[in-house]
Image (cartoon, rainbow, N blue to C red; front, side, top):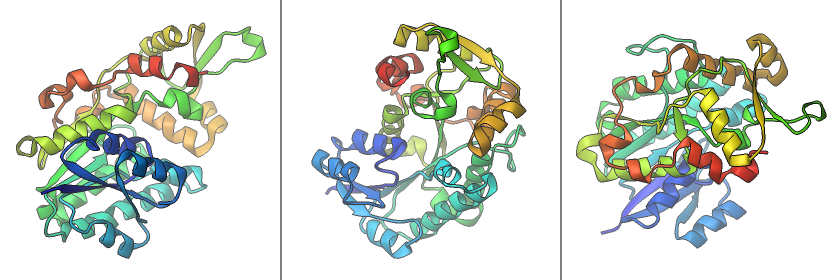
Length: 319
């Protein structure tokens, strides 16, 4: 009998990765998107996925999307709220509310066997204290609510930490390197933290989240009720700059700037990224709270795409 997994964010980085990883598996993939008639959704249909319309603000659409499912992959998008004008707190509250809408429904699904929730460690009960990062803390608080208020669902949940996207260097404006006429072709990586700051990297997120999700579903005896971390390597900023230079063939320089100036330049999204990087600087092992399962633990190391390989793959988009 075919097993169905409902995948949120199916046209985005994480959800799209899960869809691609499971399309050739025993799972029937039900991709959930707000716009089932869009080009990205049509591409998923062509690839073999079932695409359905689902909206976090429309519970009836979610009930329909979850009919007959044995698994759900849930990712919410803090940054979407932030980039559309909400404050950091408003974005966190909106994201948490969306997650809890799904969680309440999932808790009552009789056939649900596995729930994968894309989350992050934060300043909450039972976790190490560090610089408060809103999109970390709101997700971590959702973890606590699942454990305290939905114990039946908690036993079916794998809490999936996803590290820093290496893909950010290609598509996140504040993370990209830039050049100006004054640097005569040299590129500059401007950051508000030191060059030795370690990045707990998810590598190529467009591949690795799906590899993890597939392994999690295949090993429920090992993953139910547990944490797993999509952290495939831990390069310093200096090492990432070396990878970038090798991938692009361009010269590059590291430029550390004052954190308050960085925040003025990039606004609330920039401040959130600054706090994110400060958390890395303070505690490079932040992603290992709750003893998460690694790629090695799940036997998938050979299938993961590291930071260096990701930047080589994205080289034309890095400039």
